[in-house]
Image 1: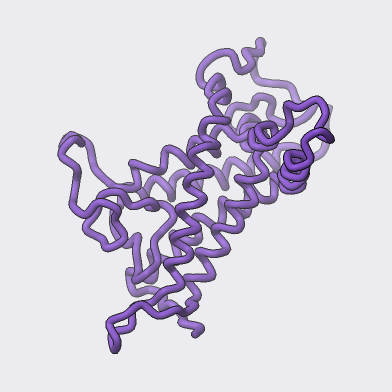
Image 2: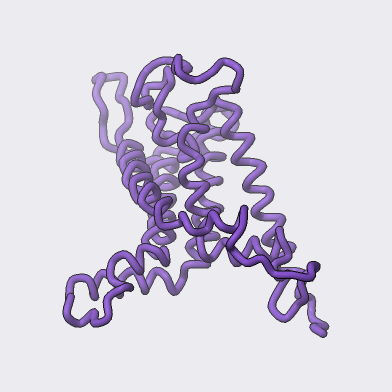
Length: 252
């Protein structure tokens, strides 16, 4: 009965999310051009195994990873932020409409006769969102460390690291800010810091924390889309700099 263009929103979401998934998968398997100087792509952070100076453990493919499968250090860490977004309460509502037509949009009938809900696979995996949150908080700290390291440039004249700001530094700092707004406004975090309490007034510290998370939570949709775009742009920026297509601008 809806006569408006109700299909536009789910179509746009489908195109954007599909494009991101295709690019992120390609970038993860490429296994090169993920670092430029003191910049490290968020798709490869933390860099656990690599010959790069950014690596936590220097070396190539670990011996415990079978040679049958392709190896990229990105594949060891991307499942955690991907799982956090996949099970996100906002994103689930977005891709339910776009990918599974469950439902296609508000007040639009589903192309099926029965409703299975979230009691069967794959929708049942939404219940693990709170556990992916813990990993996302750790990753946020690691990316913040990467942004700090992006402020220190090697000076060949002195052989020391000197403080500076490049365009890539700003890109990585903005990435942390947007991811922070998205992660720290999570519904599960809101419940964790005080959402389960009957009387928040009796826990003033938790109430203040709860209010801060709630403030970010009110813009959860905007944080979700801005951080998704920017984390992909951060990888693109560093990748093109490493390939020599773009040149990083040193501000000071």
